[in-house]
Image 1 (cartoon, rainbow, N blue to C red):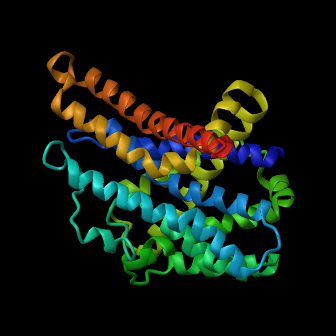
Image 2 (cartoon, rainbow, N blue to C red):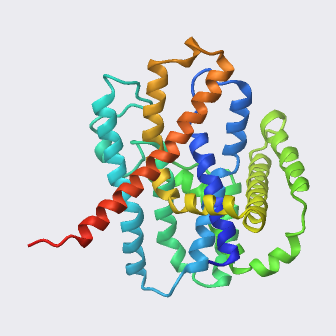
Image 3 (cartoon, rainbow, N blue to C red):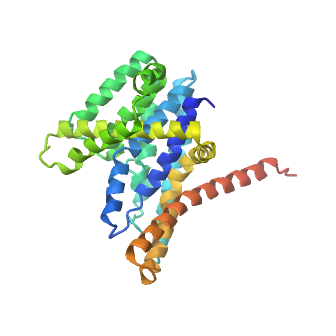
Length: 333
């Protein structure tokens, strides 16, 4: 594995942890935790899109458009529908006995075709498939630059969009996917220009950008606010990549852990909310505040719920591989 892809895999491992944390926001969360969630949301999904674009462009091979789209439908479209139906079934079966966040109805079984009604987090899979419908058309470096500029303009200009078919999310994240493609193509040039920027300077820039975007109410111009959000997301991405590169070069055991986690990132993304949901329901039924003070119990709940959201899907993935391997090697007479 090349160093540049190792960096990206470490970043993906970090990112999936941030995703799982970001999707756990219990009622009456302390302010420090809400601020942490807000910081995570300012860059974690752009980072995921960036990593997806980088890996796509670094590993792409010449293939017919129809073959490429069919492959992506099998990779994204079918799991999106199956996981959506699974979540809907679980929610319908457990809503009378357990706490169900964002309840569904029978109509959700077909609504998922145009909106991720089973679970909002599935917009990422939907949008990624939409991106893969158009990205093969921009198959040269010049076309990638053109798409990057068009995506940035579309992102910054306040144009009314709809959540139907995840068009709003597509508008918000296409730029970051194409940024990953662009950086993958021109990495050697860009790295010479910005690789030596100290991570602490980047953190300072992130703080400076974060404050006006979230606390300065007089910045009401939507274009300015959107530009700040884009710069904030790009700075967050670059900080994560700097940390990832440091881990890849100086912490071998930690690097292997994050790379391993990156291998399961898709499974974790698809199923983490279901496992988190069971943990949340347990703590609602058996609150730790009866035995511990609020801050201690809250930290324990976060640790257990987030760990469950990661470990559960990883265990599910391993179980699937073991069953698949047994069925593959079994001889039927």
